View (tube, rainbow, N blue to C red):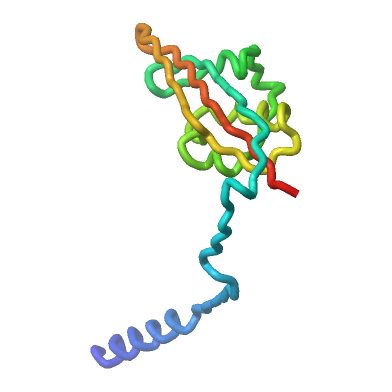
Length: 142
């Protein structure tokens, strides 16, 4: 009886281990690409200031009041995905205000966040937060 159960366990183990498949994908591109761009390659277009004002209740719930000085509607809003904002400016609702940079400078190709200011007013079980950021806008010289 022990031999039959031992043989049964080995057969089950072989059946279960033989039912797998593996797939390997290879990528033939470098992991890191470096592009050396100096300030001599860029043309300064100007500065743009973006802002967002919102309330945060109980540290969890967020209600956005104004984006770039205009009342915010969650039904109608514009957004832009600007890659250099993937750092400090992409955290929170400030990224909703990034579309103003592209509206003011449609030919821009390089954006550099210069500074960010946060003003907080504490309330009972909440706070009012206003974030403003200044972005320098450049375009590549032709």
